[in-house]
Length: 264
Image (cartoon, rainbow, N blue to C red; front, side, top):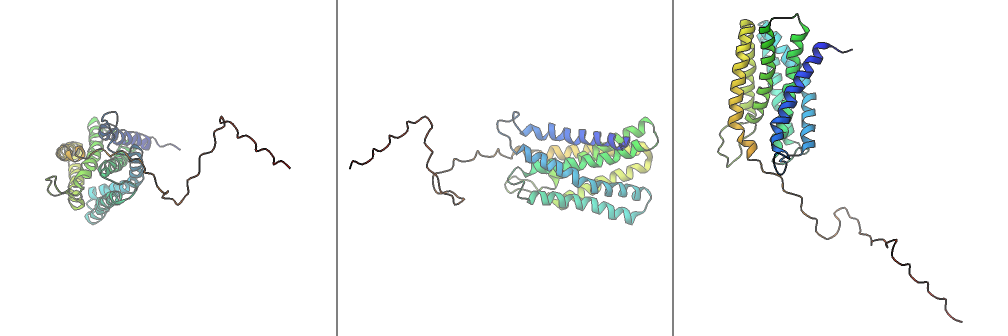
């Protein structure tokens, strides 16, 4: 059975998150650059992993919004902590994984967090589409909030990256990223108290702030060098303990003449 609200939410979430990966992360892949600065297949694996991880995080986000709107502050704090800490831990695990190695890890983290933001946008749009039809202001609030949460996840990716020595960057790391995410989600929560107009204003304010964060930290991606081509293996014993076989004779080579039998 297909639920229309989930279908619309999934479409919006995939367009927002996938569009960011295609447009922004794709700027660092061929043919936009001579050599891709990351592995495109692993980028898609990171995006797919973000879709799966985003499901429980979206549940925590929906429960946080409901608890916050009902002024059940203890439950709201628990769900918000689960959302923020879970996201930061997931990114930390991705950056430490051997499957996404090397200096290109920020690109994989961007794809991962963009997918998480897409699932959060799915939950926002599905809640709006599953309820009674509202005004144009309600629609604008839902759309702006969906875009804002994707922007918050994307900007939070770069904020959560630890500073690299020699780049002159101050601060950064999972704690800083968690603080920024907490402020962003609380801003959306407080904005909803003033109705659709307040929610729209909060979403636009968050979107502008995330844009400034991302533009400031974007040089992190520009400084990532393209991977060097693999070196030609040198002659020597096989690292797998095998022995090299002699090449088989070509089928076009003349067959050797038979040895005549010895004379009596």
